[in-house]
Structures are given as structure tokens and as C-alpha cells.
Length: 217
Image (tube, rainbow, N blue to C red):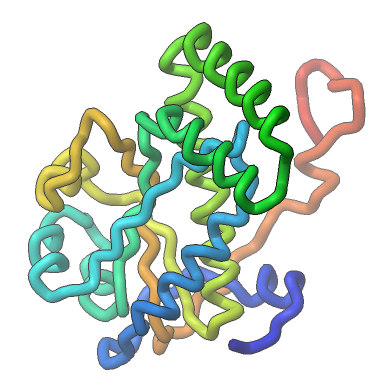
């Protein structure tokens, strides 16, 4: 680990397109990074994010023709992490709330009350609401994972360019239950990333009132 400050990690994190193919990430380290990534915010703490670690030659070969122009990242990375949202995540309410009690985060009577409220919300809200909420939460965890990886000394490349339906089928993932969010290529970068400009903050923000519907300058 590099002991970076958060600002250092943000400034140093850039998308890397080529990795050292000889570097593998120990499963214990991968699990540590995933665990930290799940400290990301989650609506009602339902934690819809799921992670599939594609690291074996066999699994990479199964999706090679489906990742479009990202095959070099696939072939050289230590792993391709498929970030998913689980459309069934609302079924974890009891498990999550009881764990809160076990860990001393809330008394049992509060858990019972909150569980009833959440279940009422789940039963009354349209399914599309929780699908969209799951996608949002999974994206938050994905971004956090990339910053955590930088702290651990690894580089990443978020990838949205892949055949989503076909990838899910190739990896034998239930396409009705899970929504593919992105791949994250991870490993030790050997190809320096290109610098990229960003809008100035004042160009993309407005305070309180929008003038003619235009945000920023």
C-alpha cells in the first residue's frame, strides 16, 4: 500500500490501457479491496453491488471477442472485474438489518421498526425504482474500488465498451437478475496514461438559480 491521501489518489488515478501480464493479485488482497469498496454509500443500505472477478485464461478467453477494442487490457490485466447490480437486492433486508443489531449499530426494537418501514417501501415502490437505485449504488462502489486500488498500488481502467448481453451469457450470469454496470481492468500499469483535460468547476455549476436553463458559463 502507498499510504496516499485521498486527494493524491484522485489526482493520480488515470485510466491505464496496458498492464504487466506477469502480475497477479492475491485473492486476499482482492477481497480487501472489494470490502473497502463496499464502504460506498447505499440507498437504505441495501448494497446491490456484486463483483465477478475474471482472472483465469479460460474466463478471459470466453469474453475476448465481446470486449470490443479493450482486448489488450483484458489480456494483460491481472483481472477484469465485472461490476453488477443485483435486481434482487431488496430481498436482503432481513439479513442486513439483523447484522446491524449483531454489530451493535442499532437496538433490536429499532431494527424491527425499520425493517417494517423498508419492506413497506419495497412493496409499494415500482420495480424500476430499485433497478435504477441499484445501478447508482453499484457505480458508487465501482468508483470507490478504483480509488482503493490506487492506494494498494494497482492501476485501473473502467470499461463500458463491451457486448453486455453476450458477456453475461458467456459468464453464465442470470441476465434477468443482474444488470452489468462496467468492467474494471486492474493490474500493474506499464503503459503511461494520457493526460486529459477537465472542465473548470465554474463552467459546469450554478448556484440556486439557473439562467435560461443553462448551467455554468
